[in-house]
Image (cartoon, rainbow, N blue to C red; front, side):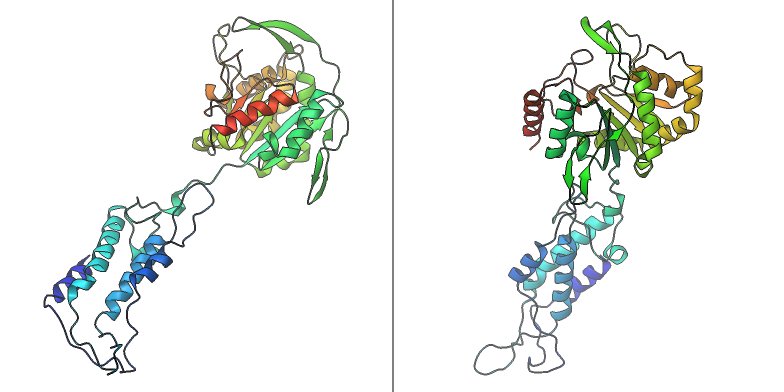
Length: 375
């Protein structure tokens, strides 16, 4: 700013005279305002939902070149080839004010062109935001367990073809009782991991005054988690997410919910039925941090031997195991829209998932309706 003040003060007279434009030592004339604006507006925005391009830096550099070149007279375009020795200084007032605005904004934000090389502005007059302070998107590893030869297989195959649900995560795996082709990518065919899936009994339950059939499938999912740990892909990601095939799930929405909990040992509760004194994990969507899964991998035998899990649902087993191991928990009702927990229309774009949608048409109707609210 002091440099700007000095430059502005030094330009107190109305005109100056300079050397001829034919002097080879002189720099070329300053660029036109139209060329400056085109170069400033061509900066690209980064992919992570925020734009902080080079507009500010380009404008500052262009104005700086004006100041550096302003002391030389322009070439006369007439037939005399002579010099224009009188240039009114008010012509440079605009660029000076632009540079002053940029530097003042940078000073307020604790950034300076000298420190950064360029000002990371989304546009002129926008709030200065340091790109290195933007959070890194959390990485999600998502799994589904689908029984083969029926509606669950049809759902995951259709989801794969649309790259929907778990197939929009950073990594994914399907586990099933039988081998079937999910689909193909540029890397080849994609098949599920085959695990033993014994027949599962159910019992009638009541949640929020509604009849609910609870699957007593703890053994199936203990086997599924063992296979996931052996596979090892989850260790490359920040969060592990288990999603039922009939759950309409949006990974991008979940990232916003888990982002504040980076590095925590945590699982999420997503349901508070009227009949339960405390929130629970409803198995249609389960979310576990990297550290929570590390704890589970190291101590799962303690849960298998220390909990009376026979006759439990898999969500009840995992929640009880995480509590036994001292993993923290966070209740977030917006993770799930389900009438047995907290009902929500598919048009509610604040919900991360919706359940249950066991038929293909109903599933994709809900998915498309929810997407239409966020486009």
